[in-house]
Length: 147
Image 1 (spheres, rainbow, N blue to C red):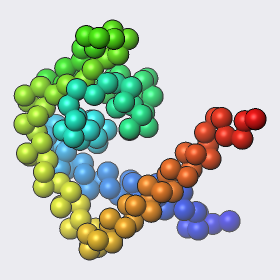
Image 2: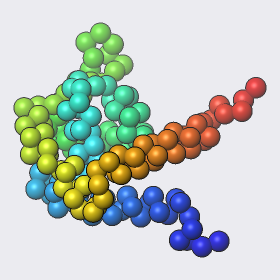
Image 3: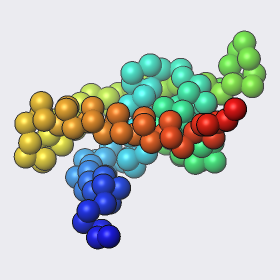
Image 4: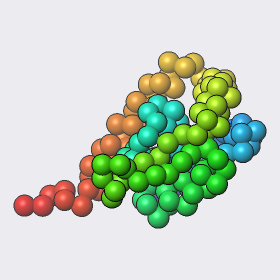
């Protein structure tokens, strides 16, 4: 068994390389990569619940709560209880958070350029990785195989 033959290490080390490429881009915006991911989701659909954000990012509340508090302290998001169901916490962009979208728009193209791969190949690779992730999550589900 060799490290170089492990798909998990290939994915892990590729994720590390992505983070190294993103870091200087995100530093210009004063963001970390996880904060950027939250903003991406809110740029897609503002006013999502904390639970939905956690599910989509595969983060538990113990990780997501401090991340959101830092975004709120930076004036990029606002956290508020849902008017209809106070158990839910809704996360909304502030004007400052919404305005960062335009500054971040070139990032995906910069990542494609840094990869040295055609965009079509990266899309196909992403689709394969998503399918792999979904299969692994299904295999690891706590109720898998329950009678």
